[in-house]
Length: 288
Image 1: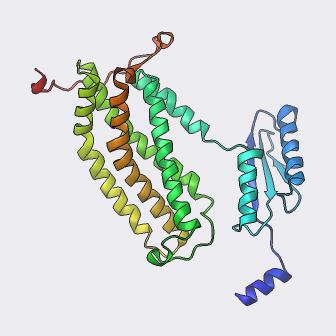
Image 2: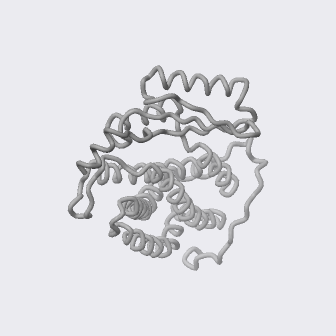
Image 3: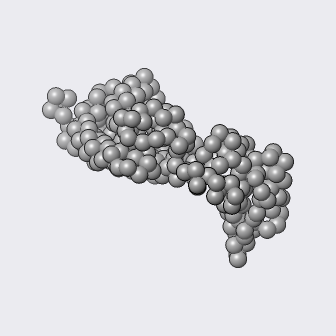
């Protein structure tokens, strides 16, 4: 390590950089080009760039890759602060596409504006909780000796987006499965409370079994020596565990219980939406 440090000091390599990708009809002119130029100037002015900010444009002029060589070593506090500045202020980051796509799909499927909003909020809560665990364990170093790793002061750059996509897809599967059973009960004429009770009971075994299998499989990755794989395993295992227990077993039924019939609120202006027919199982004998 001493030799490596001496070599790095004498022959420094390329600085760690952050890439910002912009897609538009034309990134070489108009307001988009102005915004890209403004980003370059602000990056230099804020002193978060350790070198010149460069821009590469695709041949058709629809994509631009802005390379910001951030200050710091890539994983120290200086680099982290620079990255947060880029994400939080210079280029506000959001997963609006995924969330925006989930909303209309659930809106049409369940003919309710409350159901998709509640689903997105609950999913973001569980994703945020999983991110928090990753920060506590791998960034702050809690449980290093137990898990057999040495914290480098950060979380792998690819993991948050990867975890969000996988976790959001899995949780939406659970959510649609549960709500479909609930909606079937409502369509049979059950009260909202009774439909929620029957829907949770009907899907509990499937959700729990799937969660046990996934947590067990993901936990295997936590035993690997490669820290990226360890982060992925723990992140996914914790995310699924939180989702299957706290979110699906507690928060979802509690929220639906509190909202009651308001769960199925649909403004009259949206009454033109197509009706998606849910399976209509035989009525519960107890309700006959």
